[in-house]
Length: 146
Image (cartoon, rainbow, N blue to C red):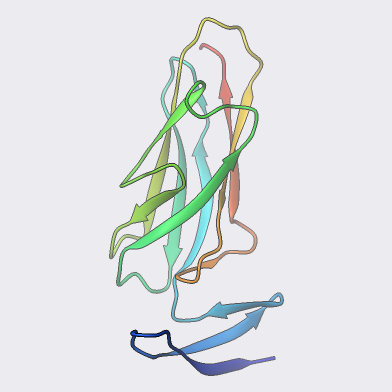
């Protein structure tokens, strides 16, 4: 246990020295930012949007593409759509210097009476950032018409 320093290189790229530490049997690059996600608000058809917030601690010097997956009983496209800075189907861009990025969940109204549905967003591991082991996933509820 402890820190280890090693060099990382790839063909045609600059070699970079990395300091890493072992955390819960996972190697963590201490030069990378650490990300976590939380639900700020739920949403409802006809109501205000729901919000997930991804927060970054540590290195904020460059933009980071944060990858995620989503699951739950609510369906993307028919029950909701996603909005955010540079958001695509599986990532959002966290701008250089930004401590957080929000994923806005826009509920879609329909004519069906439904039970509350869930949407879970789970951050995906990437070599450019570390994940907070306790807060890499969050769930919101989308309720029927208000």
